[in-house]
Image (cartoon, rainbow, N blue to C red; front, side, top):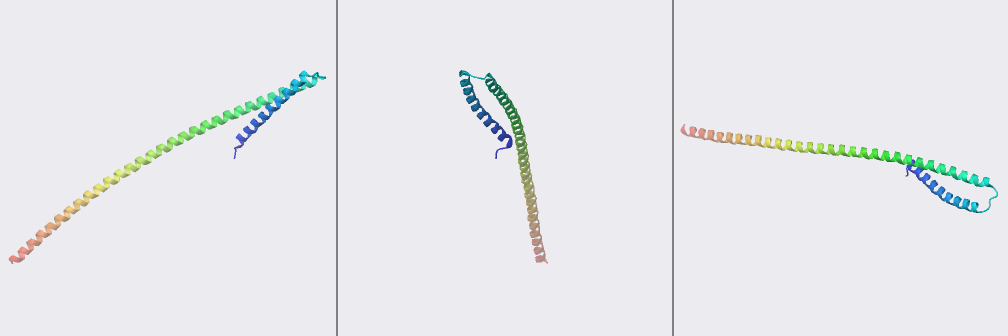
Amino acid sequence: MTPPFIRSQTQAYNELKSAARSNSLLTVDAAAAATAPSSSSASTSSVIAAQQQRILRLEEEAQELQASLSELAERLAAARAEADRSSRLAEARAREAEEAREERAVEARVLRHRHRQELDGARQEANQARQEIIAMQEEVRLLLLLF
């Protein structure tokens, strides 16, 4: 669906185009009338006056079209600038999100490493405790053999 703003410009363009065709036909008719003997100079004056009015209307329409085109160009530039700002903001947020993900991944690796170290320490303590238990059991067995 064409926006009304564009549709009105298209209509105005089509009217200008048809008016140009009419002007060329009227110019031919006026030239023919000028070459033929005219009984009334008033009709020639009225044709010229009508053509001048039409020219003025067409010039006004052309100025209106130019103004609307300028407005549309300004709106387009503003929309592009807004799109650029939004794009830069989205890129910045994406970078921030990526940095946060990387930071969380590093923190997770550090935490896993710390847990592994704690687990290894606990295993070593358990192994030492087992060895002490084995040694104590051996002492108890030897003491029982002696008594």
